[in-house]
Length: 179
Image (tube, rainbow, N blue to C red):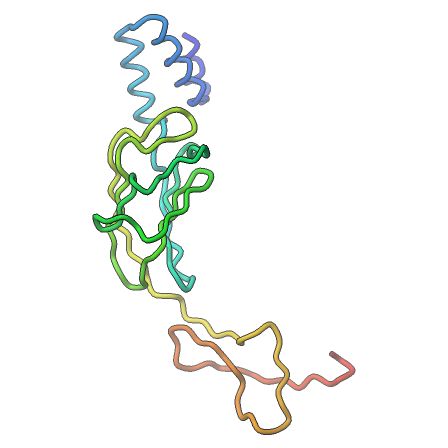
């Protein structure tokens, strides 16, 4: 009854815990069915994924509904990228990020069943994600934080461009008093 009340008030984590405690006391088929139903809908699961493609080395992040275990769990055996272990993996808070991808490529990211969490639940079933890492957005920037044009010798402004061949720039002279 407590678990059903918590579920109706949308306190799903405490409802799941109440169902678990009830099942420890008495194994009832109706309680087990209600627990399994709620766990499949609101238990530990993948909520979303994102790809950070604008950095020099792109990465994909998978977000979970609950925080991951912080007690030295190695998540590498639970994650595969195109059927192999990823080059680099970072597990923090409620997400796992996979690095070592290239721009303009497609990947199959798989999270194996049994991936542990801090709420004493594991991932119920394997999750397969198709990920596309798009090219970086076109951008132009200066090489440093600031740049003073030399009075002689050099005939250009050091710019770094990404996925673009031209830039429309305007150069303004700022006097010594205005700097």
